Image (cartoon, rainbow, N blue to C red; front, side, top):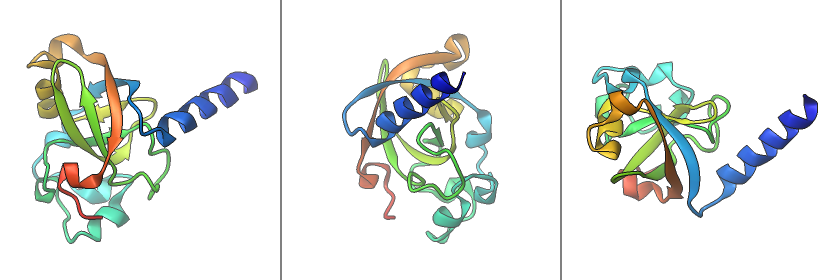
Length: 140
């Protein structure tokens, strides 16, 4: 069991450090669709609130936000990173929260990624690439 945990940790570490496309599980959580969703309820509250915003809809790329597997703890250095996810279409998502082992994005973002098939598909394996934060409209 310990060996499996170490391998999983190493695999995640290589995923989070890679700038090259990697396969990643993507699903949705309607929590990230809430226009008045409170950033204080996310793992990245302190960093994101430095931007002077407190609600999800105040972020420049709302509702293309969510949790990312790279964020494993509060105020991670991966908070606010931007990810290009590609499946049927490509989208850019701001990482605002933990995504244990997967990207958890808004339903609207998932529909954009899957050509409006988010609910019927539930989860997909997409290509994920960390890109510059400017692609998500953030200036961290």
